[in-house]
Length: 263
Image (cartoon, rainbow, N blue to C red; front, side):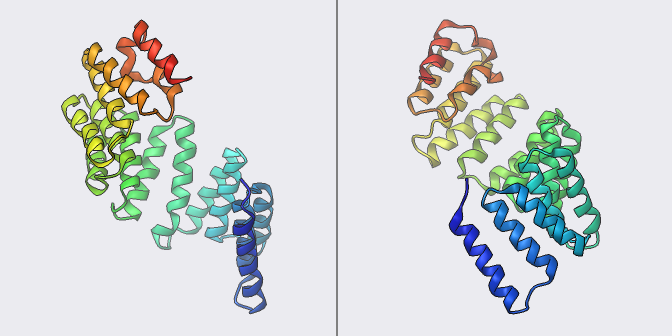
């Protein structure tokens, strides 16, 4: 979506700084590229990045910004190459400056289903932010679940849960980590925590429904799923493909609830 005010503000800042003689030429192109990208024009952002990189080929910020723009254009191979160049160029700099490059590479690897590579980059991010960011811990936990490394998944999922124990999305993901690790009691307790901190959230009964279905308790699973649907499940289309509902996926009552949720 184009954001004219934000883009205008960035360009205005660029003009004032440029006139004051405060910017390197490569930095001028970075500010322009950032304005284009925020304004929804990724192709022009790439062009500005290339102009800046022609002046300073190892500009880490420009390489990362180019990677972002290429990712937006779905040019994943080119985005990957730009992120990798950024990491090579910044290997002797503060690791925190490379977090966005590692995140970009992790996202590309995740899309390709290469969870081993994704995990490596998520680990680099956790290392760079000194383990203080809940979302970084959660991303690593998800990658570990995909690799069936439950020890890793639980470790980082629980760390995320302790850091953000009132955040609905964090708690829901942690609940699914517990389910993946065959810890249904801990999963249910985590989903119930959502009801405490976010009253009325659909994710609470939805998570409990998944636990019940996985345990083979169809009546409770259906009752909790109905409660979640009544609370307006955000993505009703995903219900039928939820792996935790596999034991009841052909049940007529379940299918009726799925149909009702998508109306």
